[in-house]
Image (cartoon, rainbow, N blue to C red; front, side, top):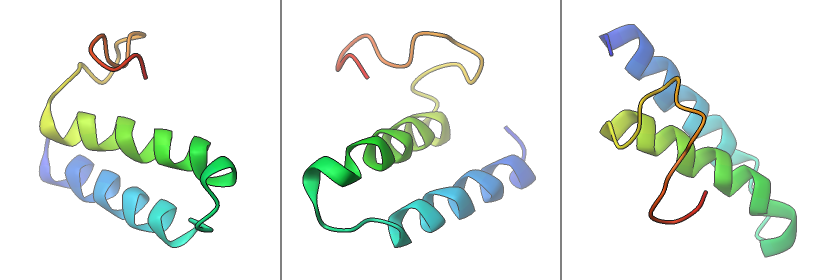
Length: 58
């Protein structure tokens, strides 16, 4: 992952965090997206994998 890709993912995470409402049910999809993006940043899963996370089932 190059610096541009990392910056784009970080920007997307920041925008998603701004859209959180505080309602657990309304935020579920947004939090899932944030989680998946954070996994990409940390290299937890391949970016093109159709399995997001075996451990947590996301």
